[in-house]
Length: 272
Image (cartoon, rainbow, N blue to C red; front, side):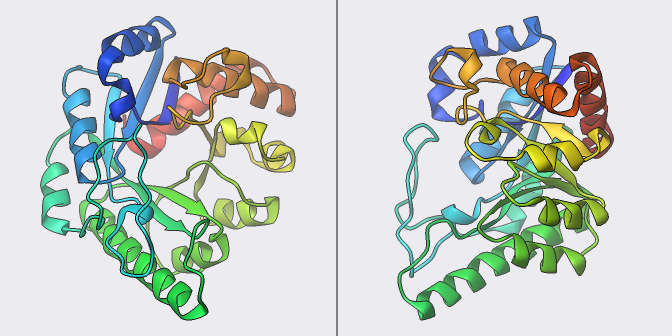
């Protein structure tokens, strides 16, 4: 068994052939966590998970790039689904209600994303403060409910590390893009490191070599970051095996060991 700890079968791009994609996952003995990025996709993730007795789970959260802001144009992605052009106002009560489902095993993906940012220093500072405030609110919900957190972080590791030092949450740094030195700081605080197809775009060898396999989660982030070995344009959870195979190669251990231990890691973190 393998666990794709970060997938998005709740996105619009999978609407027409979702059953076929899920069938391929089960054929490969892959379990998955479908991750929310706003209220709409969080709700959809739960709806998908509740169709199955086991093997399909959901997380709920508002991604930082989808928040309401007056200093930055909201970016849209047709593969993800419909958007409000003004972004989404975070409503803790609505997300708390979603968490009443037994299929919700985490808050996320939430975090910080400064990859795209305003052009002036003043607006950048406002934008960072807005994202930080949203993150803290959702981390508060995770603490209240005793749920782990799936963290999204781009171009913001220093700030996220400082925030996490002051909080008492468990979780995973999804789609890790930082340095080994940054990874070590997360590991020292007890967090897991999420590895996916970004490894084919960035040099993460040092991170993968040095991170204990007991602290790694494998993920696809589908429909994005398709491994080149898959020979497909759209990623899906069944392709998580390619990530595990390359982690095994880099760490000089067996594919079976990576599959077994990372699956256990996901079970330990998410209680699944």
